Image (spheres, rainbow, N blue to C red):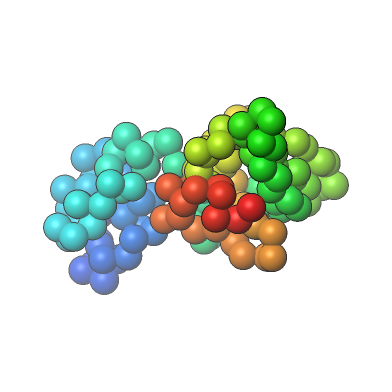
Length: 136
């Protein structure tokens, strides 16, 4: 476990711990207790988090708009990739940013993605549980 030999400063870094746990679930035991308690850093959550951390090679997708479709009780995300490809993805009405990232990564056949939300904010992996309704 690389985290075991990391400096104390790196062990305190949320992104470093997330990447360590993504690589090896047992790495979490070498993180500080306060990070060990975070639900999003638990191995099962970290493994389902498809939002890239800074410095990770991953494609970038811009969320052009999020639209709540009341009749069908879902949220439509209109996306554009850097290569110009456009995509429409739907998530349930209680969908999260992490759900969107997972759908997008699956559609693009990649493990991780950078999401740029409407307004230009880059989503951090720690925001995976944020409801999409926050951005609608």
